[in-house]
Amino acid sequence: MSSRNTFETEDRYMAPFFIKQKIAIDRGEGVYVWDEEGVRYLDFTAGWGVTCMGHAHPVITEALARQSRKILQGPNSGLTYSPARAELLLELMQVLPPNLTRVFFSNSGAEANDAAIKLARKVTGRLDVISTHQSFHGRTISTTSATGQASHREIFNPLMPNYRFVAYGDLAELEQALDDNVAAFIIEPIQGEGGVHIPSREYLRSASRLCRQNGALLIADEVQTGFCRTGPMFVTGAMGVEVDFLTMAKGIAGGFPFGGFAMTEAVAQKLEIGDHGGTYCGNPLGCAVSAAVIRYLRENNISAHVEEMGRICLDTMAGWKDAYPAAIREIRGQGLLIMVEFADADTAKRVSDDCLARGLFVRQTQGVGIRVFPALTITEAELREGLGIMAEAIRAVAG
Ligand SMILES: Cc1ncc(COP(=O)(O)O)c(C=O)c1O
Image 1 (cartoon, rainbow, N blue to C red):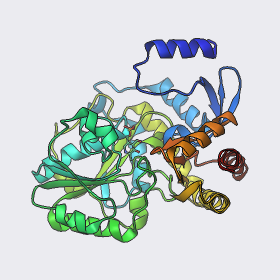
Image 2 (cartoon, protein in one colour; image 1 turned 90 degrees about the horizontal axis):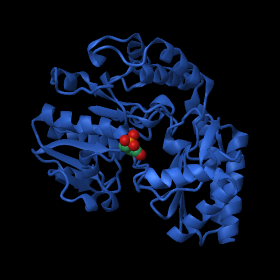
Image 3 (cartoon, rainbow, N blue to C red; image 1 turned 120 degrees about the horizontal axis):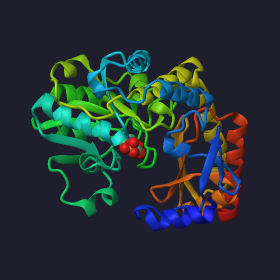
């Protein structure tokens, strides 16, 4: 197919949910992708924080090929055992916070959050869910209900009942909201989609303590932050924040659609056969890829690399803010999850479009910003190449 045919076919038959970029991506390698016409682009989005090892990494393609020659889906699905699943569980036990000793798998982040919320209600016998303003937890009806952004929620009103919101980072508000009806407080340890907001370590630790005192469960949504995106394997683990559920997806399998949630032994003991399930619940193919990804991240100390690349980003971007104080309002981030917030949405859009015209994919976020979240394996030279393109785009728009 030519790009034109691809555009026409998708525009004709896809449901109309996206304003599309008129580029048909045909293949990728590392941090680069190529369109159908052979034009090369640098990817600073990692498919929205997913392709943590870049595109077509041989460790991933080999794990996929090896497992696909053996078996994709077990007979009777989760009712049979799988060596690939067992291998992944052992990998996860090396990287999860030590109090999270039981795991179940999903196909996406939304499904993992959905299950954690559902199971928190079962475990506590309570109904209410507290979430935070500006959060993003997914697009199922219950995770949409838990998402603290009006633009994602209000068109679907009435949503699920018993969901309430508190300001992100505001301990007093949380304390007031926690009453005898609260089953769970769900929080991203760093808000991603909401514009990369980083709370204090003290806030997360105190939130954990307050939940415990109240008998509510704490669900850490690490769908975007997990698997070294911000440096450490998990933000909550690194900060010593005790949680009852930790949800995972995106980087967990480097591009293969996969997810999961981990829980404490105490939570698991209150769950019973039949409380949850799913046709794919840890299918061998996803498990094999995920185990390979986690092993690679761990053995290659990607965590330290991300911290170093993140520092280079923030140092370079600080120069942009000095050079264009009227156009750039703030730069914030941790590891390779960074937001450049502009003075207005028009500037962000023009910079984003200019980046693409110069061969760089970035993600406009919350209108006013550009989120930078490339593959975690990006080299310093590749990172500087992309930052150079961003700097040129900012100069063209705001200079
Ligand atoms: C923090 C967070 N939670 C949940 C989700 C939903 O994950 P998925 O798109 O895999 O359902 C996302 C997706 O961006 C996310 O960033």
